[in-house]
Structures are given as structure tokens and as C-alpha cells.
Image (cartoon, rainbow, N blue to C red; front, side, top):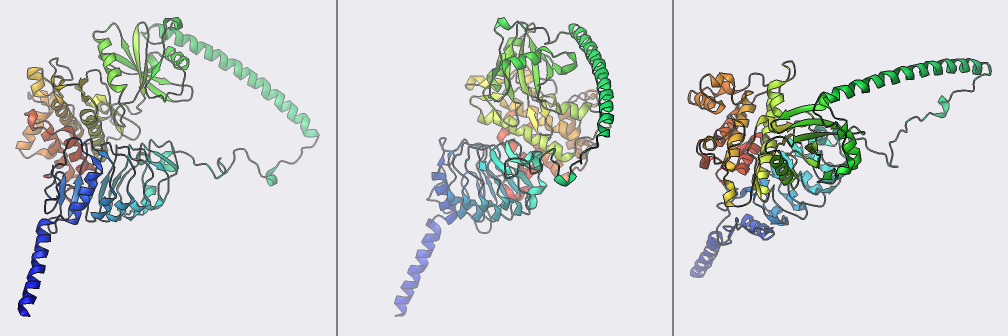
Length: 600
């Protein structure tokens, strides 16, 4: 009997041991279910195999050390298709789920609400549809929620407001509708979190919500019955008549005076216009000039826009560069656009014009300047963009009046992050991929929310094949150019990354790359940083006018910049990796908690 009991216990032990050694964990099984729902055409997840003990060594997966449960799923920028499997809800110890910048479709599974330890959820820039699951309100530990740039519809669930630890929320650029709830933390987020949802209303987006009957609850001009004016006596009609007559006479005189002044103003404006080379010369309508729109969202006819273009003069100039002048165009409804005029008389003007059309006419991203259309005149070509209200980063950093409020530290971090998103989109998501070749502060435009928009694609290059990774014509701006580009004339995507690293140093220091204090010592901003680093004086690089600087994030940001400006281009990280590192610093209060830098 004792022998039988021993054999039975031995069998159970071996069975348990076999299961633990050869059977994949529950998290691993859930990840395999998730993989089956994805379209991994490049085979990047080929080492996700059911023969493994656990998934901790799988690509883009990291685990908790003590129990081997999955902690991070990090799959951005892999061009994955397919859908997000509901099996994600079985990975209950998950802290970070990042599947952004892919081509996922379908809905957001409600089962994500089971991952109650989740701290960061990134699903932006996919093609996800349906509504935002109310179950996300169960993620009580969530700090970051980014669902932007999808096709989500419906209302924002009030349950999101119950996420008391939520620090970053981005629901922008979807098709969400209705009133933005004021529940809990939702009332603390501003326009940035909701912009680009045309049917949302509420104080956060400065759009009045309509009442249940389809109009504001209080009608303008409404007077209560008890406030009505009683009938006047007959003697008052005479007094009223005299007063009305006198007021009419004064009104007529004032109208004639204003008309005279207006005629004088128009005459003076016409004389001024003749002194400048402007767009305001009459256009021969029979020459075939017409407006061509790209995104179909200019609510004006060609005749309306051309009529406005004719009135532009020197007073409307907001900038100029090597290949054209930029004007501010204001339409009758108050909407503003930027118009870049490229004169045909300038060298390579046709090439620059066609390149911007080729690139910006076929792509769209929230961190790229939005090209609305173009038209051709006999003496010039015009490109029409959305008007970006605050102008360039170069202006805000270096040319604003000293009495103006300087950019604070958080604003600089957000500008770096948004610019990285735009550049990563060009490098990774466009087909063919695009090399900008002129990343600099004057080509980063800032809107009223300090959201950056990469602009000026006149020097950009489409990478249509392997040969296209190299160009032998040096172009760009001194101070931002990579050393290998200056020495050999060979520019690659890594040259853009070097320029971006210089841009980060400019944001941190508040100094231009060729600041006179550097030039006197035979340096640029990169050489200056290297000297301070060797002498352990990196704290001196921070702009003294910048407020609320966080020492830990300064060190992390400078480390990213140092990697971007590495003298060896092969050692510079790819742009999507730069973006991931910036996300850790800018959006995650405890980066090590969310992301294992060795998992990539």
C-alpha cells in the first residue's frame, strides 16, 4: 500500500514538473492568441513560440522578475495589421501596452479593463473604430491614455473621469461627438486632449453645446412678459420723433465721414501695393489659373480664394526664406491660412515647388504642416497651408521680446516629443519613406497649444529604393548638418537624426547651434555639450530663463541628444527609437516602471 501511494505521489510530481517545464504560461498563451489576430507580414514576432516555457525572452516583451508575468508589450512602428484580441484581458499584471503607429483596425476590446495594473496605454495612429469602452474606467492605476489619430466615434464615457491617477490624456483627431464630460479628472484636461473632434462640445474645446431641442437653452433677445415695456403716452411720440430725426442726421454725417476715410485708405493701400512685388496684381482669369485642393476641406470656391490672393500686399508678409515669401491670408469668415509664394525667377524654384507638392500632397499627420492646396500664376507659384498662429520655434526661443514669458520646461519637452512624432512618421510610416534634410528650429511651427508642426519640405527626398538613401548634393542649414554629410556630401536618414539631436540641445540651452560664444572657441553646440560633459558641468547647458526645470528629465533628455549626435551615424538610434525614449521621459513619471530599455 505504501509503495502504491509513493508511485501515485511520484506521478503527480512528475506531471506537475512536466507542466511547469514544457507548458507555456497563461500570459504566453494569451500573447499567442493576440499574435493570431495580428497581420505580421515581416515576421517580426516569429520568435513567439508555444514551445517556450514563458514569453519573457520574446521580441518586445518584458516580464516582472519575481513571477515571470508579462509587464510590458511594446509593439509600436512595426506596420502590424489585424485587430487587438480580447485575450489581452488575460494578461492581468500588464503595466504598459504600446501598439501605436501601426495599421490596426476593429474595435478596442473591452477586456482591456481587466488589466487593472495598467499604467500606460498607447493605441494612437491606427484605424481603430467603434466607441471608447466604458470598461477603461476600471484601470484605476492608469497614468497615460493615448487613443489619438484613430476613427473612434460616439461619446466620451464619463467613467474615464474616475481614473484618479490619469496625468496624460489624448483623444484628439477622432470622430468623437457630444459634450465632453466634466466627471472627475476629465475636467482638468484642456483643448490639447480633444482637438480634432469636430462634433465635441464643451468649455474644453471652446464650443457651446446645444440644448435638447437643438439650440442653446437661452435664446438671444428673449424678453420675459413681466419685463415688457408699457405703452407710452401720446405726448411722448413727438419727443421720440425729434430725437430720431436728430440721430438720423448725425448718423448720415458720420457715415459720409467714414466713407471718405475708407476711400482715402484704399487709395493709399493701392499706392503702397505698387511699390512691392506682391501677389496683388490682377490675375488674368482667362490664363487657366485655378486652385487645386488636396484634402477637400477648403470651404471656398477658387474664385473666392483668388480674389483674396489678389488683395495681399507687403503688410501681410509673415516670413521669408531662400525660396519664397510667406503671407497671411484671411478669408471673409475670419479663417486664416499661410500662403508661400515661390517666384519662378529663382533658381530651382520649380524643383522646390514640385517636391512640396509631391510630398505634402499625399501625406497628413498632426505634427506636419497641413498643405491645403496650390495654384500657379504666370510669374509665381503659390502653396496654401493652415496658418500656424505662434510662428516658428526659432522665433519663440530667440527673437521674442525679453518681456514675454519664455517657454517653460514642460513646453520644451512637448515640442521635442511632437517634432519627433512628425519626423518618425516621415521615416517609418510613409511609403516611400521621406528624408527631410532641413530639420531646424525655424522649420518647426507652433500652434496656439504649442503643438509643433514640421514644415518646409523643399529639400526633402523620397527614399524610393536603396540608392535613394544617399544624396550627393549638400543642402540644409549650417549648425544642424551631420559631420559625415559635410565631409562626403552623403546624406541618409541618420543625418536627419543628427539634426534632431541638435534641435533638442537648442531647446534645452535656448542657444542657436552657432551661438557666437561657441564660434569664438571654434565650436558648435555639439562640441560645447561634449566639453561640458567631460568636465561634469552639464547643468550649465540648461537655459537660465527656463522655469520649472526637472533635473532628472534634463539628464535623460541630454542622453537622448547625445545618442542622436553621435559622430558615428551607425550608432545613432532610428527615429522611432528616439520617439520611444522621449515618450518615456515626457509622459511617464517613472520610466523604469513602464519600459525595459533592453527589451528592444
